[in-house]
Length: 424
Image (tube, rainbow, N blue to C red; front, side, top):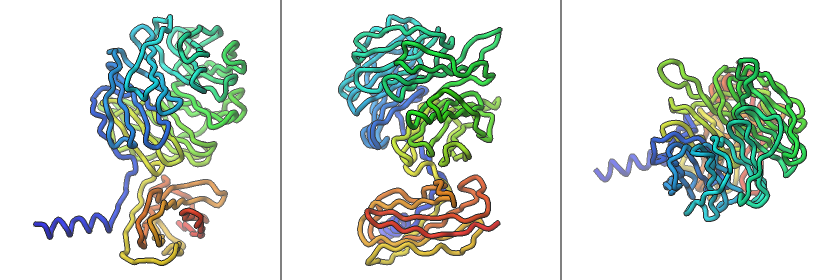
């Protein structure tokens, strides 16, 4: 029996097949999770139904329940550092704050009795909250006092985001002429004045984020919008689906993920879309769940967490890349090496061999001829060894066109790039 277990263990060391790189984590709850906030690769907090707050300090390997002191629905959470954060929700416009990573949460007075859907801070003092019944609140002292802001707001403000203490946008749902319509509003003076940037959309809007002061995205009912001028103008992007998006997260102007889903009459059809070229192309990824996803948080281009109904938590450490097969060839190298892929040209798969002479953080990515990132094949610490990846290119990217692509290995100061050709 010991011999059999030893053989199985060696087999697991030799072969790693990763046909889906979003993997489930045990949240410890079946309550819906509505939002998640990570401040580093390891430290994150998720909130949800019945006052649920759960915390991880090891990238989600373990999620620990925290005491919120409420049974209200908690819809949004935001941390400015590993210790200081806020969560908001229903139950008479509840606001909770922690300064010790969630060991304890204290209530703040919103002077508001409508549900609150979104909270965002730019530092430990200045922040905003958005909610139902045309509500936007601002604080300049960490939430000790919350002041109502005035303006032409959507009836239901669902998500708010600021790039600095002056410039911000919010999205939501308005009721106009007997119809519920999507709306985007904007401020350039910290919320003293708000102007409508886009209104009358038949698609409701649920989430907004920015990669920098100019470039941002808003998502909602079957729609993805992009701005490159700080929210003054918005243009629609082609997502390839009509399903609803509840959350979006970008880590730079190229790399982002949107999540959501649709009810098909029997169950939810979960949606995860990924772009590595600013939304010019959105690629569907495999979630492995039938539960609706409510939001997503990426700390960098590779490490992200999505949360959803029934306590669902999904984690990726390679940006959600799929269809990568890796084998340890049991060779001991003396130097870093990136070999030419074989076959080349190829369709639909090719093998990439590389060597690591010492325990090292290894990143291997694929780029198109314009330099846009297509896929992250490896992003982890590797022990000494020689490895061979099989990349299923056509499946991984939803059907890449024929053409020239580049793959690059980075480890410390070592960088090497090679060319390959996909020919259909």
